[in-house]
Length: 95
Ligand SMILES: [Zn+2]
Image (cartoon, rainbow, N blue to C red; front, side, top):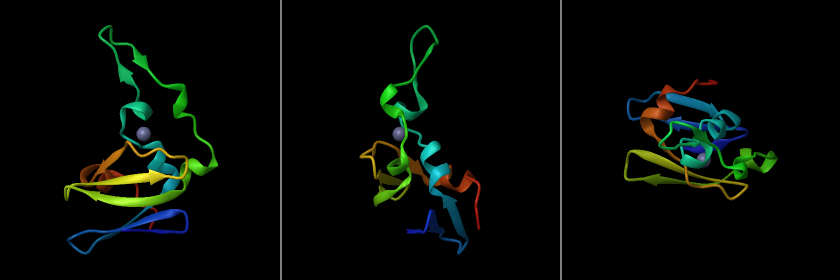
């Protein structure tokens, strides 16, 4: 996996390549801050700190987690989202 321009290039075990636009990737961040948390009354709470700016769509670093997910360290310091391979494969491929 590597960042190419504004896309993340992924190569899967079966040889298939996938390109995910960073903008889309960030917006699909599965962490509790970005997705929001649902309280006991079923109401959705979103943290105001999840506001995005242009560094939010830049990747500083990528790290493989446990062989099933990728942790992305974004330019704005956000890094709590773990993108499972399953989630990534379901994402729209720009390629
Ligand atoms: Zn997030």
